[in-house]
Structure formats: structure tokens, C-alpha cells
Image (tube, rainbow, N blue to C red; front, side, top):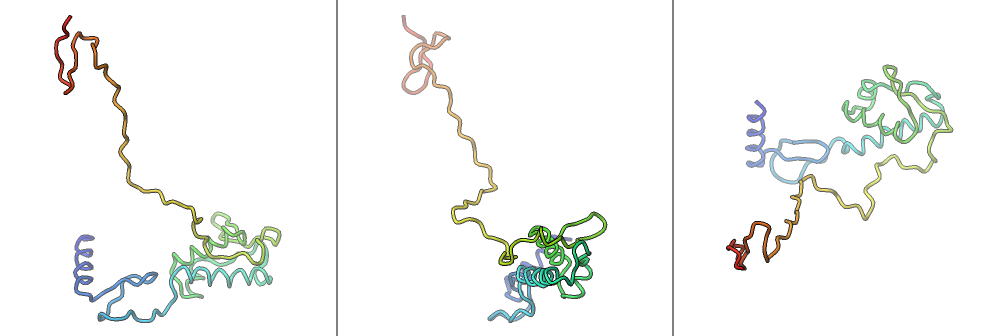
Length: 169
């Protein structure tokens, strides 16, 4: 079933009836300039919703140790996907504005655990000297033990082509 769906998707892409919009998935439509997206890309949505919640935490609308929001509440209130809502809560936890209690949700932390005011909610990029590791396994090169060109332990000599000849005494 999955292969059939992928084949249909491939055929539609070849005919230029669908195209990929980053952060939005595949969009149907005639070839030409891409339509203006209705919603911003997912990373921008995450930062925006997280910033709104951080403002609520900092001004006291969400009290320390109070539940911030559930994923379904974030989906309804901000019109984001479940995955985006999960990412929002993850950003709040990673930045120190929230913590999670198992089966009780994500809760706001106390002010002493908050990062400085000017701390960005955006994901920091890799450092400039970062080299991405490849996932391919590189073959290991091993050196073969060097065999003596003179007499070997079996009484045979190697010539310049690597052939074994009987040793002459």
C-alpha cells in the first residue's frame, strides 16, 4: 500500500501537479510561483507559541508549579499540529521555563530557574567549525603483515612478482 502511494506521489511530482513547500508538505496546484503560505513554517510557529507562553510565565499569568497547557489545548488555542505543540513544550522544558511531572503534565518553574531575559528561544545552529559526520561506514584499511623477501619459514623464496620458488642453497 505504501509503495502505491509513493508511486502516485512520484507521478504527480513528475507532472508538476504537486510540489514540496518546506514546513508545509506537498501542495497541489498549477506550476508557477508557490502560493503564499497561510501559516508560517513549523520552526517559526514553535518559537512564536513558546514566546507567548514565556511571556505568560514571566508576568505571572501562569503561576510557578501550575500546569502550562496540554497538547490538545495548544492545538485548539493556536491552531498548530500535535507535533508542533509537543515541540513547544519541549522548548520550554529545555530552556528552563518548565518541567514535566509524569502523568501530570508540563508545569512552570520558579523564577530562579529561568534563563536571562535576552535568551533566545530559537534553536542555536551548529558551531562554525562543525563537521557533520557521515552515516556511511567507511571501509577499514588494514596493513598486511610484511612478508620477508628472502627465505620464509617454509623454505620457499618469493620472486619480484610474488611467486613462490624453491630456495636454492
